[in-house]
Amino acid sequence: MATTVAFRLPQQLTRSTTSRSTAPLEKLETAPSPAGASLFGSIALLMDTGMSLTRSLHRLADTAQSASDQALFLALVSDLERGYSFVEAARHQTLSFSDRQLAWLEIAEATGDVEQVLPFVYGYEWMTTGARCSIAACCLYLFSLAALTALVLTGPLGMLAICSATLLVALRLRRIGSAPGGPERLQWMMLRIPGIGKVLREGIVAEFSRALALQLQQGAPLVQSLPRAGRVLGTALGDSLGERVTDALLQEGDLTAGLRSTGLFSAKYLSFVRCGEETGALAQIMGELAHRSEVGLHYAAQRLVAVSRMAALIGLAAVLTALVVVPQQAHSRILACRPAFAKGGDCVPPPRTPPCALRSL
Image (cartoon, rainbow, N blue to C red; front, side, top):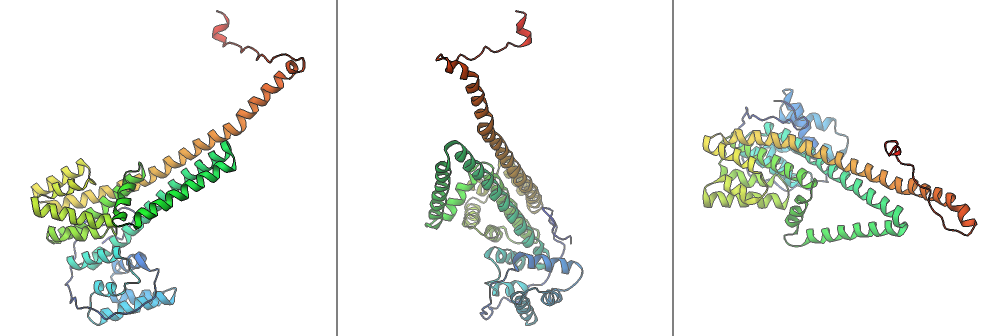
């Protein structure tokens, strides 16, 4: 199994393990740990060398850089030695793992192949972080351009107005997100923003498709796979997506119609899903669509940063032109008109010299 590298994740499931008991664990209070997705990436890398899961956790505990990380690894090892699965042990550490990571591990539990799913937990956390950084960079470029333009054209008051307007917009969005049904509404608003919406949409489609493909390739029922695929997004929109598609599938018996009703998937994507349903190769089709969306997310994020940077540079050039060139031309005109003003007359600008092609006419 290849380790997770940027946007090229393993697409075939070739190993399987036996599911263990799902008995509830005793509640254990632990301090928040920064291990998160990097833990899954480290475990996947060690297991790829042939080490067992328990031995990999022991090795990570020996090399942990903080006491909280070491306590987390040892707690996971303790649960594994007591006969519990890694999914159960991770679900037990509720303060160390996010709901999104636990949803991925639910898929690992459903497919019975924890080792195969671990690279995806790390890979999609990495891709999501990269997409968020691209969106943040785009917003920073545009805000800097607007603030600088306001400062040059209207002075400090204009820059203060831009900062105040930005703060009001942020507070308004926060109020929308805290209202009932607000998180999903806010996510739909962001999906409609040019550029940013493209990045977010590609990320949603990629992760949803990959989660669904992993389950279908192991023979999991489609009706049970859809809600889990929606939960891996870790957002209210993801939960609603899984529920809506599942309801449409139960009512109409058509996955393509359910995906179309969400408004998130393109016509080309839906045509491929239709082909997968008709040929019985839905798992392979979803895996290929996930890979294409992963590549699309990579290029969409790069394009967003490049376009916003170019817009900022062009805007900066325009501001510098307004700040330097225009005042210099005005100053030259005043100097040319000074003799006429001294004699009490009006300033008549000198006639422009026609181009060489017009002098002979």
